[in-house]
Length: 130
Length: 77
Image (tube, rainbow over all chains, first blue to last red; front, side, top):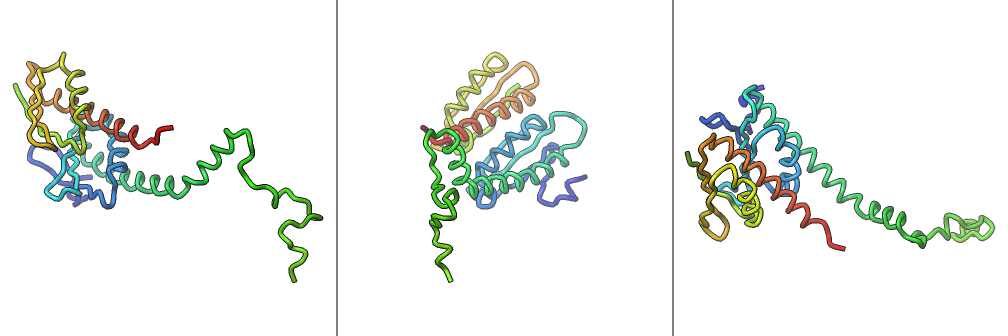
């Protein structure tokens, strides 16, 4: 793969690559989590661009195997991955917190009066519905 | 040999920059020059490969800054 295949990856004359990340799409948290996963594969440097909500990510190779463009492309995919992970984490936060709270609570936090009641008691009044 | 890089404190908090400078003080002579409220210039002088030292310094600083950012996001008990 070359940078010509991935038009959003910019090549500098010094041999480094850069991409510009819009923090409206990929928040700073998403960007940081992605960077954290890549610091073992390449050198990274972040700086704001002229537009303060756009962060420039500079890549420099750790080795001379010429795979920096692949790393930059994989970094771009990982941004999407981390964004989806964060969205799902936010969507499922309340249920996860409830599960953890229930696991550590001495008392039962869930209202089981309906689900564990006897059919004879009929707490939801199913038998009375027409 | 000397290299200089501007760091923005929105990304790299000042105390993380200072911690990274301390961690690399045995490898290079590192000096900070405040540029504005939001940025600081770092000058790295070393007898060895200044580019390698700078790259390692920036990666180390990025990891410190990310860990700080994620720690701040964890709500305190």
